[in-house]
Image (cartoon, rainbow, N blue to C red):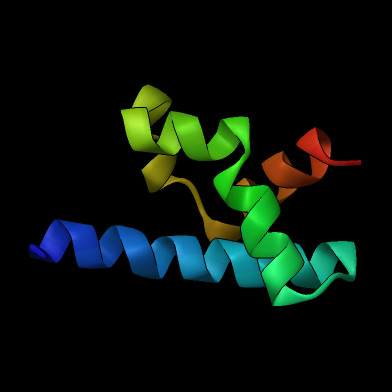
Length: 67
């Protein structure tokens, strides 16, 4: 895996952790929701430079997807 791939995975891990805290769910549940979310799809596609947004911003986006 290249450096960019590792950086993406670390970003995802931080977002999942923040999302789990905000939603009050386990990391496993948060991971499942994250990898099935529109936010994840947009991150993968590089839409709107979402990868440049803060972890909290992305966790908030997930909160809007999964109220």
